[in-house]
Length: 335
Image 1: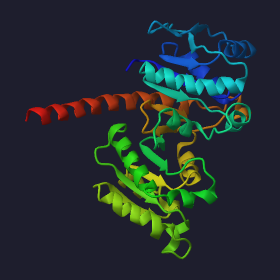
Image 2: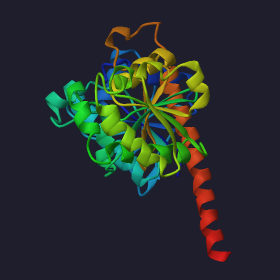
Image 3: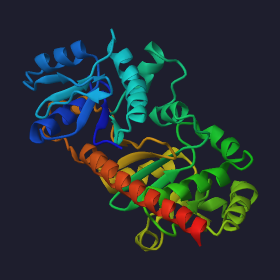
Image 4: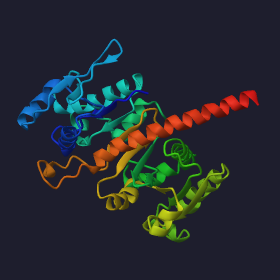
C-alpha cells in the first residue's frame, strides 16, 4: 500500500470541492490526488480567484509524479461537468486499486444529474463502487466518534424495503459482511450488534407488521449460531439512546432514513460514510452538495477531514490484522 489518497471531484458546483481546496491551502504537505479534467478544474480556480498551482500527477512507467504544495490532479478527458464527475469515480477506483492507494474520498455529487446526463442506471456511489469491486455484498456504514450505524438497505423506496429484506439470507449475509468489517477494518475483537425492527415499535408483537416475527427474528437466530453477538429487533426510535451507545459497537437499521436521520443529528454533519467489504477503502462526507452554502462562513470542513482520518485509521487496522492473520497461518503450519 502506498501513501496516496484519491479524491473524486464530486459536483464541481457544490460545496465539496470548495471545502477540499480550502483544506489544501491550510495543509499543503499532503498526499491527496484529485481526479478531474485539467481544463474544468483550471477554469474553476480562475473563476473563484484561487491561486493554487496545479500539478498533473498522472502515472508514467509505474511512477506517480507528485508535487507537494500543489493541487495534484489525475487528468482525463471530459467535456461536461457531469461526465467529469462520473469518470472521476470510475478512474479513481481503477487507479487506486491498481496502484494500491491508501483509499478514496468521494466528494458529494448530484445523482439526478448523473442519471439524466451520463449513466441512467446510476443508483449511488455506494452501489457503484460495489459494482466496480465486483462484490455481491457491501455495507453502508456511518461513523462518528466510535458510533457506528449501518442501514441494511440503501437507496431504495420505502414500499420495497419489506420485499428486499425478505429475500433468502439477505439479512444474514449483510450482517456477516458487517461483522467481518467491524473486526477487520475497525479492529473490534468481538463486535456487539443491536438491530432494529422495520415497523414502528418493532411491530408490537405482530399487531402492526409481521416482518419482525417472520423475517428479522429467524435471521437473528441463524446469525447467533455463528457466535455473533446480536440483539433485537427493538424499536428503531430507541436504538441510539445513551445506555445502548455504551453497550453496543454497531447499530443496524432496516432502511436508509431510519439510520441517517438520528446519525446526522448526532454527528452534526461531521460524520463519515464508509463502504464496507470493498478491497479499496472508500469514504465520503455525510453531507451533500449544499449549493446554498457556497462561499459561506457557516461551512464546516470536519466531515471531509474526518474522511482522511478514517482512511488512515482503517489502513492501519488492515495492516495490523493482515499481519496477525499471517502469523496464525504460520503457526498452524509449524505447530
